[in-house]
Amino acid sequence: MKKFIQFLKSPPTSKGQRLGLIMAVIISTLLMTFGFYGTSKQLGSMGVGSISSVGFRLNESVAHPQDETVAFQPEPFYMPDVSLTPWDGTSRVTILVMGLDYRDWSSGEGPSRTDTMMLLTLDPLSNSAGMLSIPRDLWVSIPGFENGRINTAYFLGEAYQLPGGGPALAVKTVEQLLGVTINYYAQIDFAAFVRFIDEIGGIKIDVPEKIKIDPIVGDPIFLKPERQTLFGELALAYARARNSEKGDLDRAVRQQQVIMGIRERMLSPEALAIMITNAPTLYAELIAGVQTNLQLDEAIKLALLAQKVPAGNIQRESISIPQVLLAESPDEQDILVPLPDKIRQVRDEVFLVNTGTLGPLAPGSQLERMAAEGAKINLANGSLVDGLASRTQSYLQSMGANIIGTINGEYSTTTWIVDYTGNPHTVRYFAELFGIPPGNYFLEFDPNSPVDVLVNLGVDWGNQNPMP
Image 1 (cartoon, rainbow, N blue to C red):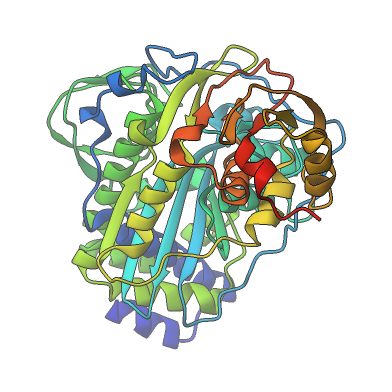
Image 2 (image 1 turned 180 degrees about the vertical axis):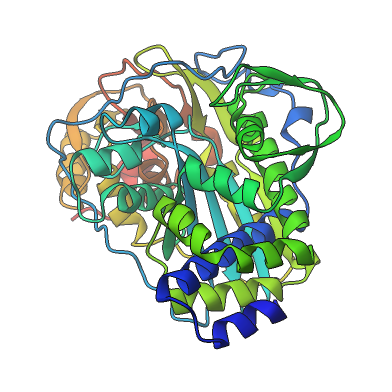
């Protein structure tokens, strides 16, 4: 780092040379710092038997489909606020790092989906940091569109040319899922990743078991279970491999291994010397492959702050089997349906670490997030009060809820709710509004359901409610 600071102060041969080196060092520093310290849940050791009792259409595996359709509205019914909240320079900062799907990226025939999503956070006040891996097959609410895989948010933002494009819509989707404010994004393409790994002389990886990987260039190969050096193409293929037991979930562990290899290599003096020597080439080949809204001074400050975080204050986690249910999408592809409360628990582990500070506040109110989710809701009158469902419909519609109809319900002393398509913000809002206890919330995934959420109004709501 001392050499790096001296380089910043020295007169550059060109502005581009200095910028190229700065961005390369910043990106690697952020990734290595957020990616390698602390503890990580080992996904491969987690079983799936505990989810079989839930009312979902379950599958044995999470194999990634070769082709997948993208479900979306021809015209978005809700236009999200795509502006990002800038970092104030002193409080917590959060960055969404994305890699694009190689099949989309290489074809050049249209917008890409994201292949990788990692949420990085740094809190200078508590001197803590964390990283959360987000699986691409997570079935979520995409602001302004129908529910879909989280990796399609980037595609939709680009296809509809929304303000901020794919990065902005991807950011808003993750914000809505996790209830956090994201300040920045960084999108890194495959060519830049491969070039960077080659430039620093490869990375060392402890491969835990024999695995088949498929490099973009060349034939598939098998890696032996041993510590070995992987150069750019093989490192990328190892990070992208999803042919193990839990597919995309296992892949998060391998991606974190690759980041660990980058950190180990970047800690060596020779790696930094290589980057300084080859600054002009790095600028030309790397900076074109990085898209970010980070300003140069902000990136430098973050890189320097990240290096000061103690190892015990940095947490790595992944959204995995305990936080999702395995199901099928309407087009019969494997998806991961989020369990909102369990995902928020993992989020809090990443953001809180052991500092005791409060977790992040979700952008907007719970009411605003419910309205933005746009779930199609049916109200059923399960009380003995005539006209209760109709009155409640008018009351909720005034708040922005998408009530599509009312029906006669099943008599019940307490109100209960069924979520058919995964609508965490709607469910959370209604649970608080109706005072629904945990035992009266049912997750019964049915992609063919004509409604997203069913609320059966009980005697408790008929006897006591805030309606005028």
